[in-house]
Image (tube, rainbow, N blue to C red):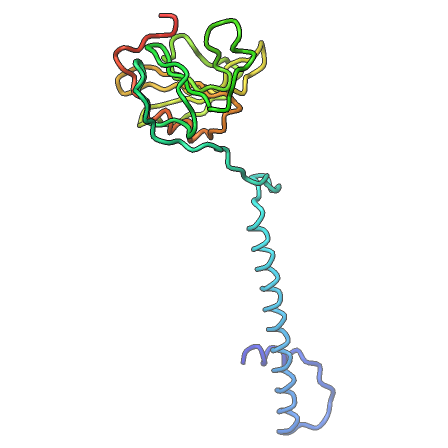
Length: 219
């Protein structure tokens, strides 16, 4: 009723006879105006709601721009490891469809069945190209150029970063350094082409146990 009274007060009515019929007509016009205004309010609210839904469908970055669509980084699934446990490093999971290439007191190395022989395998030694390895950290450390991501591995502090591929150029390989509850510093090396997300790398590391037989590479 307040809306009707407000509109009536603002109506411009030409001078003329007054009486019940005139007042009734004025009230009717006022109510029609209120109805039109309410329909306008509903229409505007609906438009804002549609904009809000559309905005929700596009992630907005911290600076107001549209954020790029998210993607699932991990393309592999970690499964329980069923093989013979390594000498130096026991593991609870491995990527599905991968096999053990090397297992001794200094390193545990796995590769996908589809890797095949690569040029880096020539010349002897064990190439880590396309392979995940677990070893003691030893003297390995991140270069100053590498960004560092802090992670948690079974309640212990860990760091994700990258080694150098060449002077001044970071490799797309990821290193995860973490210290076990027994005080052993471990290095998990994951090549860039391996489809594991950072979270999966941390999960994989969480299933690693360093045995008393583990030694540093070359030790």
